[in-house]
Length: 208
Figure 1 (cartoon, rainbow, N blue to C red):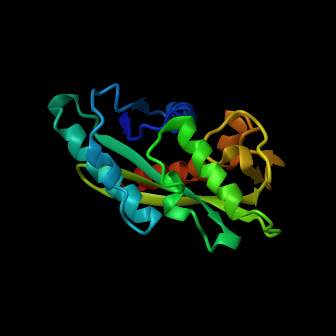
Figure 2 (tube, rainbow, N blue to C red; figure 1 turned 60 degrees about the vertical axis):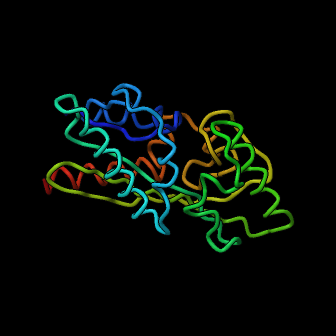
Figure 3 (spheres, rainbow, N blue to C red; figure 1 turned 90 degrees about the vertical axis):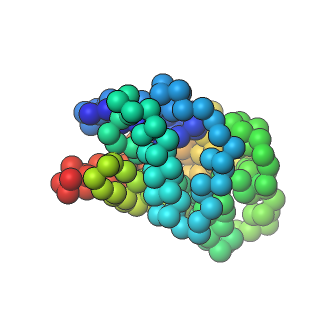
């Protein structure tokens, strides 16, 4: 089944593409469908929960894809995810993407966010944290969402060159290494995003 993977995040595309193909889907990107970047996209994730943001993204991109007519895939998958740090009261949480307040993209944005995180945790001994993701599916006939999570801690310095976002600083309890040190296959086994996507695909297949 053709599926629109509704993200412009290159890291998410690298992680989820193989997983979706292994699950029997044919994932397409926004670029594949010619869905151009629109300034209003930044305002879609304006809610206070991962569930609301993920579902809002799925609905938004389903509507944009539907405008393609016969070329539109029947299913849209979107997600909202973030890092929750216990000592920071759960921050950055749903604000993880723009935690620094920067309007940059890609690695410069990741660097700005991580710099702010390190500043916020300077001198803090309790560095427990967890990643949370909610994945959402939207079709013409229904909507589904599911949550995934994984636990760990924030290191004082980065390790590894893989992953994206906060991954080089996030030490996974289950892997015994940072997400920046983990291979794609290792991360898929334990990551919040893989768990959320796996769960929502299972719900979709059992309830559609």
